Length: 322
Ligand SMILES: [Zn+2]
Image (cartoon, rainbow, N blue to C red; front, side, top):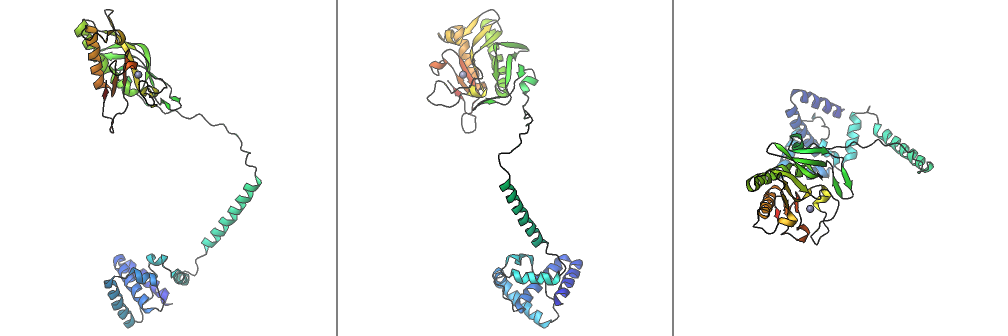
């Protein structure tokens, strides 16, 4: 009966002032714990601070003076204390009409588990009806260089060959320079990053061609672009950037007056216009791409420039120019 009075008291106090009621509840809880014969080691440990102990003693004295002090409900944080059974009794006293739903639910779960296990044992596992799986949706991305007309070409289907491939490959056939399109000798399969880096480089070479030969660039002679293979010219088995459509090889250039400039034939002699033109093109590539390899790099590259946007350095900001 005293406990019921507590509940009513706490509820009415809460209506008046939630903050005050919490203080009152704490105070009363401490007081009652002092007075009651029950031993609650967890709570004693929890309030082991000297101040708290003193407060508890003072409050206990107050509680003795006021014999009508109602019993508080246990504090929520005491739920894990060893005296859980005592609290369960208190709860039961107050909420006599609460049904034991948890027990029923647990029993039902156990029964269900048992039924499942029996069913598993009876069903042969290999009987799995084959259902038709709808084709996976292909997610690809657009390329701004193509949207803005800086390159001409089309989006290809995703490429996936073991470790090689790329999600949104492009087939590029021409690159913009000075308001016109400079065709590639053969279409390249590459990614958007390379397609984005190409126009500025081609435009630079176009400018060199006009200045040095008085003839604009007519065609970029392209070599290998996407190809699933290991890196060449090195001692490692790392995949080449060609494997990710992130590299192209350029063999040379053709000008509108018919002049051909070939890496293989014209890198040397360096002092000839074609040789100088190729060095300028190589130098311009070093700022446009992260990797530029030419005849000076190794004998694998004596007949072409290898250009890619592979990652060098921890932040992918280092450039390899050989
Ligand atoms: Zn290459």
